[in-house]
Length: 300
Image 1 (tube, rainbow, N blue to C red):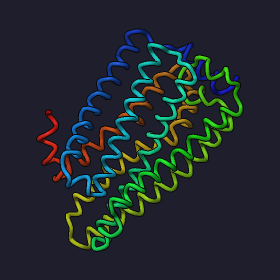
Image 2: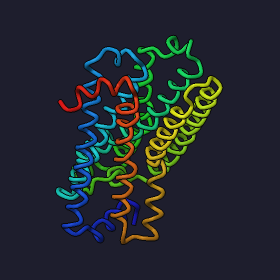
Image 3: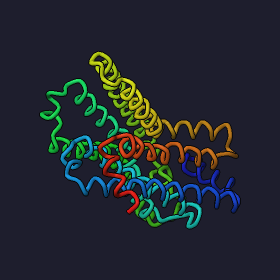
Image 4: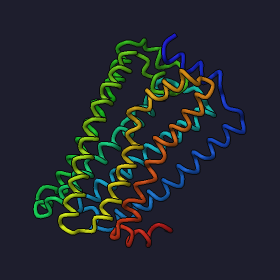
């Protein structure tokens, strides 16, 4: 039995009761709507004021917000469909999974880019305007999407090359491993995620420790800088559990197969939902400039 069939067998064997399934779906939908409502207010505030879309920092931030809205909407939709429709056509599921993977992998890369921008602003303030331009920021966003596409699209090409065409008309429980079942894809995913993990964490540690040291030397309000570092670090830690979640879930599945669905739900909330609730706090509430404009739009 391969990994895909094993996962589907576990889902079939340990399905939730109606009350438990309803509770989980209500939690997920309420969290998704609440976070997307706040994020919609952030996007509205950004679009209404030129001061934001001419600033590279806020452009990176709003790209993160839009990316998170797409990701959260897709994953909530897939979560609800898994309990209602249950099985989807592979061709339809494939589109959902690819878009969800693009946006999920974009988040840590976006946070790393925001860390670099913050590092340049604090450590090289006189050169910040020359280095961080709107044009370069848009090019950086394009590079992010290109990187995630190079990471994810090979899954589709390998599946097209190894599976018969009627596979895409069959119905499956919509998971990455059921849509892209080739074992080579799992090995490729583990290698890619390991590389991303190392690069992003090195970037985060290097930039934020330099920010903190520079703030202290220059007698800047180091406490606020440190709090920002902690929040960014926590958000990144949650986002980057994406890279280790498959291995952790497989490990838990081996020891506690009867709790497989509950573990998956917990990982979904921690890995996919919670990181999307931190961005509004960092820039929508803690940022003085954004907060001032946000108040007039959030309740509209």
